[in-house]
Amino acid sequence: MKNTTAKKFKYGSLSVVITVVFIALIIGVNLIVSSLDASFNLRVDLTETELYSISPETDVALRAGLGDNYETFKVTIKFLDERDVIESSQTALYVQQLAEEYARQYPNNISVEYIDITKNPSAVEKYLNETQTSVNRNYVIIEGAYHYRILHLAAFYITSEDTGALYAFQGESRFTAAILQSSIETPQIVAFTTQHGESTSQSMMLMFDEAGFEVRTIDLASEEIPEDVRILVISNPTNDFQGFDGENPNVRTEMVKINEYMQSRSLIVLVNKDTPALPNLQEYLWEYWGLDYKPQHLISDEKSSLTGTDYYSVIAEYVGTSETAPNAYQLHQTVSQTTGVRTVFRNATELVVDTSKSDKSVEVALQTSPEATSEYGGETSTGSFPLLALSTEMNYADDNSAQYRYVMLVASTDFANDSFLTSGYGNRRILSSAARMMSTQRNIPEIDYKTFEDEPLTLDQETAKNLTIFITVFAPLIIIIVGLVVYLRRRHL
Image (cartoon, rainbow, N blue to C red):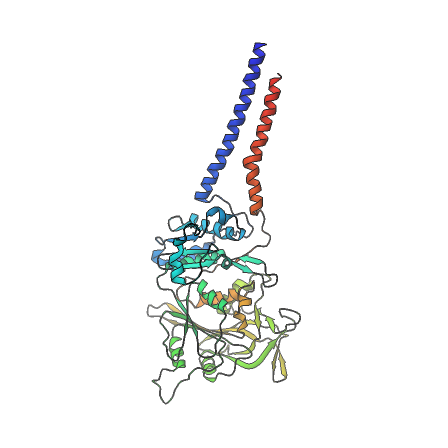
């Protein structure tokens, strides 16, 4: 009887000890893994489009843009709330996970900080004072050696024009561009002309800003074009530019300034059906660059338009290959090689393109379908009409390196409006390609957005929370119950 009691006590005590040790191990491992994850971001990107991954294009852009400073640049990505709060929001989580991946890939250069601005509001006073904008927990700050960028979480996403839902994640392009912007002392400039009735969408300006340019406006009648301006944009002018003055050749008119500027840099001109005749600007574009437009010639296309009733929102066809039209192909290749992406020109006018010009390479990059029509004065003509054309000239710089200058003529100002640049159309990518092409400093990242379609193995916060509760509470509870059952059974041995 004594031996039996001793055996019961021995086996029962052993089962309890094993149970307690096992539970302690589970809790300990969970704490260790959580701590390591907080320090080293142990999560693996299992999404089909690799939303949290960084492509090789980022490193190419950083090396090209930072040059000798590539090894030593320092950037801090700051989230304005505690880490667990950021991770509780699916919208913020995508951005946070990608930021942590940047810190993992560039451990000596990029770090991530979490600042609870409710408890420590003084941490963002500098940004409030310098930007004169509201900075709250929905923003991310990317701060480098020379500048900082303040981005709203929504800026990392593209919204579907059709449904209004989040369509794609553009986190990598936004972060890489912001890192470059904050780390380069003197950025390149895009200048938009003013005082000619111009109108420019905020999305177009923002696109250039995101691409690493400083965006300015310029009045050519009273200002010179700065040397750092790499792209001059004339968008939807309604009044002509001051032409050459034959009687006073030394007078620096607006067209004289544009002509001098174009000796080494690039120009984008956007017009539409309502753009009037502008003789001085048109003469320059045609005589020097082989490009022109026909005022009041409205393009429509019943076969290839955005909707069944809006025939004036024309869906473009991509023209040229890397062999037949290399410059035009460079503009649209990221779009034309992607199935189902539409590039739209609304309220477009008819362009005239002289592809036989001997001293320039003049190419059509996008055009209508062969069934499109051009309406003017009650008459119509049918055929394929150019919608976007590019004229290129190459010469040699003092160091004997090739130097290119471009003029891009766009048949629609709506091509760059808010609707088509903030949705999943190809317009944004083509405009971004133009910015990269015309930039003399190759520091603009050529990074595409990533759609949310067919994304497997994604846990929402509720699921993740429930899984954590199961692992840390219910699993040990099950083990305790099993241990008690074993103990009670052992008592009757």
